[in-house]
Length: 137
Image (cartoon, rainbow, N blue to C red; front, side, top):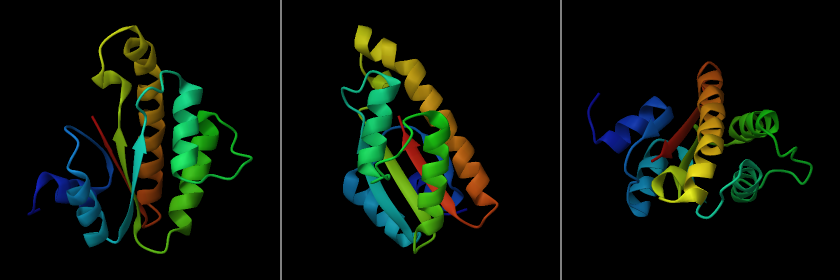
């Protein structure tokens, strides 16, 4: 598979961890793959409810979004399946694991649980010919 690591991640789908790409490069790579690119800033969100709120706002989930991991999986899958293109690419910034200190340490388990759900959703969608790409530090 040729291309940059970012291009390969976009083509493959699923969760890719590593340094955040430049915003313009992320959006260009998403468009090139027929994906809608969305940046979700989790900076300062040190709890699972706060992170879920940020995701719900960035992705314009319905007002009745359940604010739990099952609802995240269901709402995200519905969103990706409704996309006009090939799917959705998420760039997660401000990841709690990036920071130092007590707030970041408290946020790490929640962030990892959310990332696991995003990965499961991406895997399930791959079988439906839709792609969810999640780039996280």
